[in-house]
Image (cartoon, rainbow, N blue to C red; front, side, top):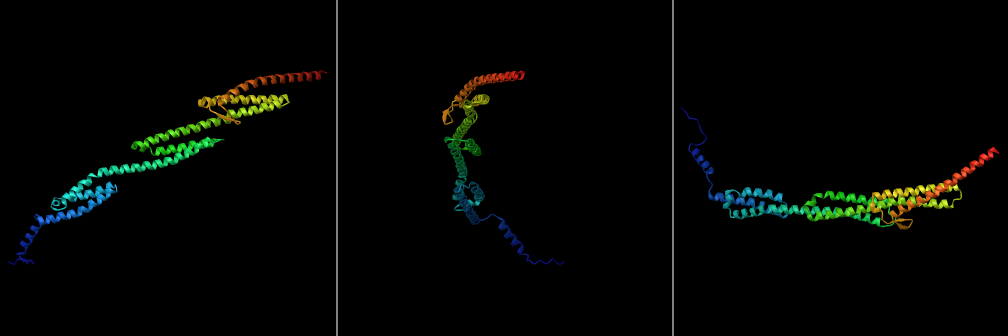
Length: 310
């Protein structure tokens, strides 16, 4: 019986098996040492990169590189490398710097955010200050007071944007509270000026108009026209007094606030009092003129009746 032909000599198979077994067997000390040195060579640049990242406060980038280096340096063969112990020590030192670096980065980011917020607030407060200064001049108008209130509202929006920073930064929190106080004062000032303007354009103007009518009535020769002028003046004085009381009731602080009326300094309280007094005085004048008018009309009617009979 013939055997199958094999291209390899019969003695080669046992030799190949021996070589394979030797390759799969334990490495020699020299091989392990070379492997450890290779691991060291791979780990060193990772540690260098991690250190650079930490110097830039990039804790995330450093942590990723340190994880890769740790995998390399955790192999048993690393102990056979001359640099192994030093690299492991360096790994531990760099890992210990991760938490402080994160804290430093967070503080730096917070400081930058606070600084940006302060800049925005300063710009907004500059507008408040400018509009508020305009209220110190003469002939202040209502649009100027509204400009202050709008600037205050915009600044309060800026404060809201940085609300989360107040709990993180004590210094900024204190600054924000001071800013809010200044805004409250500015708004109060603008509202106070508005109250004065409302009083001047309302009761005070009504009093001026009434006094002008009284002056015109005194110069009038026609008794009927004179009665009409005095009646109108009385109504304006009455409206002045009533409106003045309403405004003062809404804003008691307005009562003694100095106001300018026809170049003279007075107070809403004084205006309200004078309007009430003059309204009462004119009531008597109007009553007399009405009686005189009724007498004239009666006399005229009697004359007409007499003429008709005649």
